[in-house]
Amino acid sequence: MERFTKSKRMVFPREVILGHKTTSQVAELCDRIGMGDNALVVCDKKTKKISGDEINQILSKANYKVKQKIVSAATVDEVNSVIKFASKNNIDILLGVGGGSVIDVTKLAAFDLKRPFVSIPTCASHDGIASPRASLKHRKGSVSKTAVSPIAILADTYVINKAPYRMLAAGCADVISNISAVMDWELAYKLKYEEFSSEAAVLAKTSAQMLIERADEIKTRTEESVWTGVKAMIVSGVAMSVAGNTRPASGSEHMFSHMLDHLGPGIFLKGNKKQAPMHGEQCGVGAIMMIYLHGGEWEKVRDALKTIGAPTTSEELGISKKKIIEALTSAQEIRPERYTILGETGLTREAATKLAKTTGVI
Image (cartoon, rainbow, N blue to C red; front, side, top):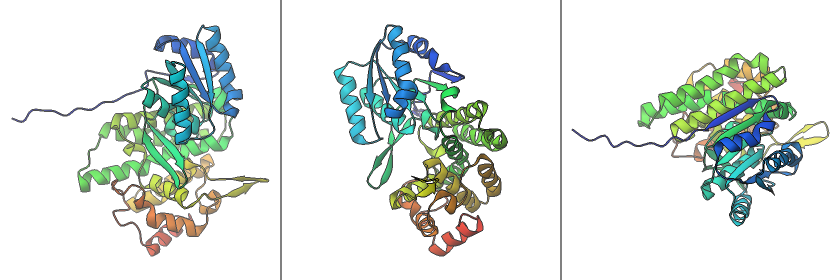
C-alpha cells in the first residue's frame, strides 16, 4: 500500500475585528499578537490623515516604538523601499493602513521580511484585504504575486463608510465575480484534473451569494452595508488561503480584467474629473459574460451588480466596445497555464462580439 505523503499549508488571520470605530482597539490587538513593540505603519498621504496618524498616536501611548512609512503606489520599488526601511529600524510588525495598493505593498514587504502584518483597510474596493496574494503595477498592467495572509484584520466600518461608495460597489463586484471563478475551477477539475478544494469553493460561492442576496441592503450606502460587504470580502480572502491559490476568486473574469489593463485603461468623466475603471468593476462585467458562457444565471449576477451600482456595460466602465472585444479574444494569454471557459485558444472575434452583445455589455 502506497504511503500517504500529501502536505499542505494554510495560513489564516488569527483575529478579525470588524465594526464601528474599531480603530481604537489597535493597541490591544497588537498586544494579543505579541510579536514585539517595534511597529511600522505603512500608509499613503491620504490614509495617513484618515487613520495612519491616529494609529500612530494610539500605539505610541501604549508604549510601542512606532515608525511611519509613506508609499505612493503598488510597485516593486515601493515594496523594496518598505523592506529596506523596516530592516534598518528592526521592525517587529507591519500595519498596512489604506486601500488595496498600501495593503499589497505591506503584505509583500512582510512576506519578504518574514514578519507579521495587520491589514487595516480604509476602503473596501476588493478582497485583497484578507488574501495571501498581492497585485503589483508595471508598465503593461499588473501582476499577481505570492504574499502572506494578514495575521489580523482590523476593519473600522465608520472609517470605510466615509470612502467613496464606488469603492465598496467595486469590492462587492469583485466578490460576486467568484461565481464565474469557481465555475472555471470546477471545469479545470473535470477536464484537466486540476487539484480542487470543495471547501474553498463553497466559501467563495457563499461570499458571492451573500452579496447577491443582500444587494438591496448594500445600495443603502450605510455603515451596515459596509459591514456586509467587508465581511464577504474577508470570507473570499479566506477561501484563497484554504485553496492555497487564487482559484476560488480569480478565473476568466480576472484574466479579462487584467487584459483590459494591459491594453490600456479606459477613462470616463465624472463631473469634471477623469476616472479609470476599477479592478472589481471590470471583474464584475467580465463575470456576467463568463457565467453566460458557462450556461449559468448571468442575468441574476447582472441585476445584482445593477442594484449595487456597479457597472454592467462597456459604456458604464468607460471602455470602448472595440477594447472589450479585443480583451475577450486575448484574455487567455494572461495566464495560459490556468484553464478556464476560454479554453486554450480563446474566443474568435465573432464569438466575442456575439457574447458581449447578448449579455448587453456592448
